[in-house]
Image (cartoon, rainbow, N blue to C red; front, side):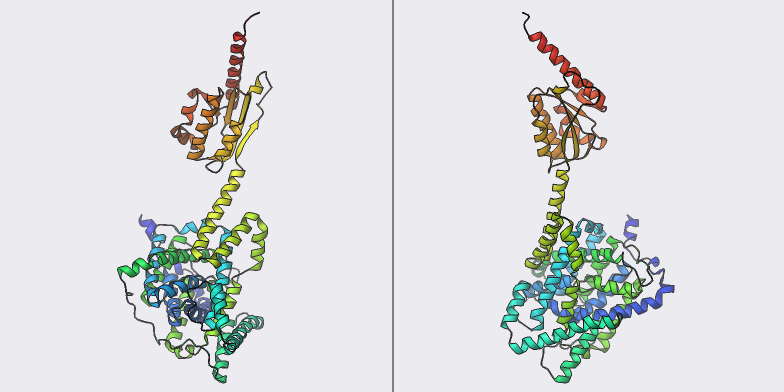
Length: 556
């Protein structure tokens, strides 16, 4: 018990490489901080909680998750997926509810980590993850349209509808100004990496757009005044009614935070640094503990729920970050901006941040990966398409749920197709009467998805006196499958067909006894471990039946 708890806590070994890597960790942390600045501002504004909340989340959650999380290189903070979930919650419950929501969701994620549910992310199939990512990318892109146009009253609507309404309701000059700033920022982000990949393209784009607007005196919506320090930690306003109202959203946010953080950490564990070095493994349960504490801390500082951010994590790794210190440095860089640069940040046009997020959204969609998924199999293509569609049209959590359920259906169908009852020839030399013996080899899995079909195949046999069920090749047997075996035996015995069972595996013995398979046999001795003995016993039944028929025929 104590060992399990100890695995979830920070240890000295977390910083074993720091004496030799602190220089590259500082460089990586500064680089990530510069990259994260416009993203933190943009995600805060786009979610409806404001730029200050985005910055506070990046600073506080970044440090807490770095210290307590299960990955050495994961960078946490506000992310696009969380924005997609938060925007309608803010529209329904108000900005003031987000801090409490963050604390509630953080407690749930923390509980998931303590109860060792971190490895559950392995049950989410790859096509579902890719479809989910595509859907999030589309939503983030569309959400920037009303944001850039400063459209009001459309936040709680579906992203597609909101984008259409904001464009149709905007004036020509507003559209052209927003479009011009967005195109400028997008162009900079596409062109700057061609000059030098180490340059912070998104920050340069935002700076150029801000300078242009200031010099020309263009009247466009700005971020607005920011606090010049972090707010003192405090417990968010709480009431029984508000907790009840936020219970459902908190569960949704917690599930999304857990899923995104674990997927990001899993991807990060496979990334390589500039020298080809790996980042090392991650601890999924400890990662959930760290992310839960990060969201709780962010809520106490007036921030929003946080998750692991794969884009910023990738920048950290590729910049040479080796230990958690680089992530702490990233948060300190952002904290410096809060204390020293809030006046300058307040002048940034919101349309410039929209341009940053549009590029971020577009880069979430890897066309090559989508092509591979779509070409791999029809079931994978269906999973990918269904998940992406539900994500955009309905809800992110529903998309994950429906995607996993669809994956389970396709998987069960595939297992069912590979399962069956195959009739075989009796081994050895053929003898008279062998045509009255049917040997069935049960293969694959006899479970609720395949048992009915297997029963039908066996029960359809005609003109036989003995049926041998060869079960040694049966990999899976569940209660439904065992019960179906009982029904099959009862049906055959009622027709006068003797049923013999051969090769019940040890893992199935207890289930077979408890459900009544053995009891359904005519005699308990009709169980065999050796096929030759089972066949000989079947032949003896056929011979006795033949002798009985001969005695019954009257002598002429």
